[in-house]
Amino acid sequence: MTKFLLSVHVLAVIIAVGPVTVAASMFPATTRRAHTAPDHRAAVLGTLHRICRVYGLIGLLVPVFGLLTALSLGVLGDTWLIVSIGLTAAAAGVLALLVVPGQRKILADPAGTTPTLIRRLAMDTGVFNLLWAVVTVLMIVRPGSTTGA
Ligand code: HEM
Image (cartoon, rainbow, N blue to C red; front, side, top):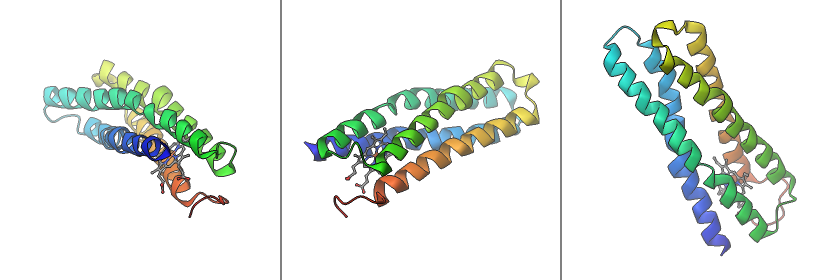
């Protein structure tokens, strides 16, 4: 059973977190190419935004199956896991409260988009990427864990 839960957990990471990382990272750069083909750019930005929203929601499977795996393994009280849960919550918060709304703001008023707004969005996106990358390393290294390798 644990193997099944862990498989769904890692599949959700690959299927959901991967696309959000790429789409969110492409969004600020695409916005910067402001003056070339604005109609085409709006369509691309709309698609990238939709990927971030939809796959961000699918990404909720990551903590759900992560928690089920942890329960099944009996490691819910481990420090590495508690830190990971905190960092995952922070990553989800940055995505839902800063990255997605930042994109929405740019899409709502492309003409009023300032370089500061794009820089801010690029920074928030970088923070999101860094947070989940740190969690992935924690999941593999599991510092202080006495179970498994
Ligand atoms: C609430 C948040 C999370 C919980 C409770 C959780 C829980 C777990 C647990 C219990 C394991 C099994 C560790 C073991 O075999 O001893 C695991 C493995 C793993 N998790 Fe998470 N996780 C969470 C979030 C994440 C996130 C955000 C990512 C990446 C974006 C991630 C990536 C992985 C990976 C790649 C493994 C496989 C590691 C390995 O087997 O070497 N997890 N997770």
